[in-house]
Length: 522
Image (cartoon, rainbow, N blue to C red; front, side, top):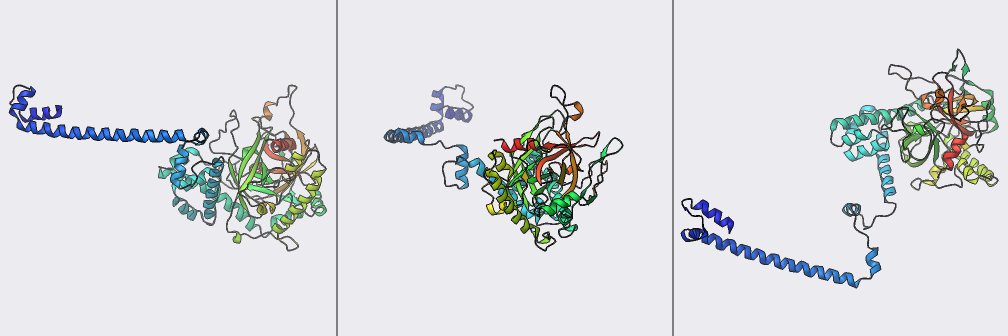
């Protein structure tokens, strides 16, 4: 009625009085409008009443059905969460989320990332790799960037900014694609089985020597009698040491060692992320759940996930346990499978050696008092289960090393063997250039244990020893050797190289006690 009244006022501007009577008396059009509006209002009101009545009847019927159902059934009905609605939209048959849905989601992400990486590794040229990456969807780019631990802020910005996406593609090339090509090309350029053959001949870099107030040595290799004797005494010495060492497929390098059952031990700081705070006062970040792509000397690549970490701010403890979760397959036809002197493949011999060592360590395990540690040290033959996403025959074919059960190892003066990835990046030069070590990958060096870092009466480290590992050794290493295993003369892992003293050149590492701690942790 008010709307009609205003329309009437506008229609009859000459009417002096604004009363309803004058409007109705002198304007027949207003009367017609009032009748139409009233009729429409009456029809709308009746429909609303009918709808309300229908809703009330539905509510009553629903409440009646609830009263007829047992109380236990109504309590057990789960609420439909947002995640369930998303799963229904995606076509999942189940209306409720399984308990391990988050684990399944992580596995799916890992599988998707591995599939993309496998497609990327089919390419040999960086330019072609960039074209491939630019054609990826935003979701695929995010998947592989997250697995490769690239900057999180760049990953988020790349979803809507093409320049950020291009920057992310460049990082994938520099941080993963080029290091992968470097490792493969280094193995190929050194000939068929050359690096392994030289190791069997006892060739390794010489120990550090004290010269002009600094520990230094040449990275060039030469024959060492005790290393040659170890290979001749134990025909599987190279398979349980050299072949078990893995390299991180990363621009920063990094090394680890496979101890069986798909488990790899390395230094905690090798499981790094672009978002980590590298300042000296920063607390160690949470590294559990991060991923690393690793490569064996036969060219096989795998994606691993960090399970446990034993790390301290002072650097005395620096160990991490990784679990192989997926294989990153690539065209290995371009890669020559290393052949030994007798003409058999090192890959097949490594599998046979792994089986032989497995039987030997299982026999030793029965006589051991520390079953939990020996199971982990013997490659997990009776301790824990590997990731179900990996086939058991694949893991069993991987060569592995044994962790020494001696928690005090290594002892001062004992001989040590270190095998690691020196990395081709020259981090000591102001210019951007590369190093040329011989061999460039799976570089072996020998040395000795020089004791432990000393502490004061209160058990505190000296200021100059902050950030250094507790163990001191004289094996030649470079930046990429972090996480490289330290073997004794029996081929057992007694420590990991972790750091070096800039002032004296002394190399440092973590001892067997730290490795036992990360293996026993739950």
